[in-house]
Amino acid sequence: CRLVTPEPIEEFKYDRYLARYGIYSVCYYPGVHLLDKGQGNSLMSGVLKLKKSVETKINQTISEPQASLTAGILIGSRQGIPKDLLEKFNITGITHIIAISGFNITIIVVLLMNLSKHFYIDRKKMIWIIGACLLLFVFLTGASASVVRAAIMGMIVIFAKHIGRLTKVSNLLILSAVLMVVVNPKILVWDAGFQLSFFATIGLVYLSPVLEKYFTWLPKKLAIRENTTSTLSSIIFTLPMILFSFHRLSIVAPLVNLLVLPIIPLAMFLGFFQIVAAYLSPFLGQMVGWFTWLSLSYVIKMVEIFSSFTWASIGIRINWIIMISGYLILFRLIIFNKKKEEAR
Image 1 (cartoon, rainbow, N blue to C red):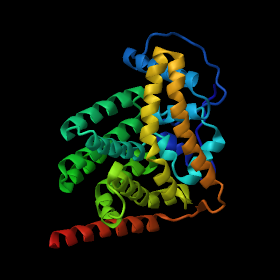
Image 2: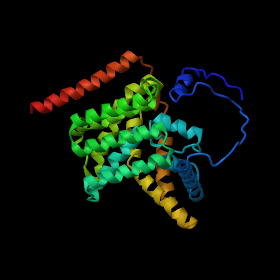
Image 3: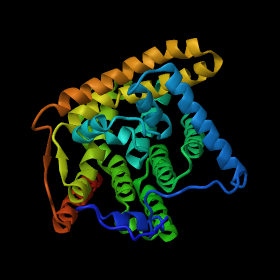
Image 4: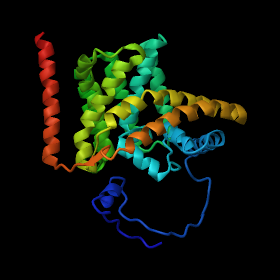
């Protein structure tokens, strides 16, 4: 095909978006000819075949759009999700549950850590279990740069929860960010996913403990209080970047996240056993899949209800000065709270 230089699409800097992956030319309507096969990485080939097999089992045991939503939550494959439903997810501010990002994985990791408390699993053992699950997840989703980054951010949250010392976590967070930037310097400016992952992790580590003091009226049972503060802290810390990059403020996002996020671990748990059951028997997979369908139907219903409000999402454009000012205020509040705690 004829190679052309990518150009910005309206306000979206498509050329710089591709440049972060080292792509400076694109082609449209290419003629593709198979030259050879069996020359790729055998390990990656096996992983991709497994991923394709998992997608097939999901589609055989559950209907759409719940099937595509299950694949999106479990293995980051969301090609089959209808565009109108994706737009509703954007309006309600919960796209992170179907996009493999630091925001998504860190929330899931926090929920898994909380589940370990209820099942009386030793924290050290749980860290190894979650670490192994994240490693398997990275390979299953294709080990793309965004997934690897998200997994690293997720492990930082685990480490923070384990040691309970923010100074060490600060060093680890900065070191991880520096290493990722050294590998690919372009992500520092042109990768919104990297930026959102970084700020979401900061919010979970530093702001969540601050907010938890104001939500003592919520029950600790089933980790409702911690899940609430974790969700709000991530939303707050990613808000300035979202307004700067995407010019959209979801008014209903906090409430929808609180209503939907507690269901996601259940949906993932059911989806996992649905796939295992499907490999044993299609009928058994469909039986388990009914419960997966039910849980995700609730998620879709909440999204449809709240996205229908005319005021659910509004356009807000801020410049980089306001964005930086917002983060300076947030960091100032965290430092002030830390000094207040030390004074006590």
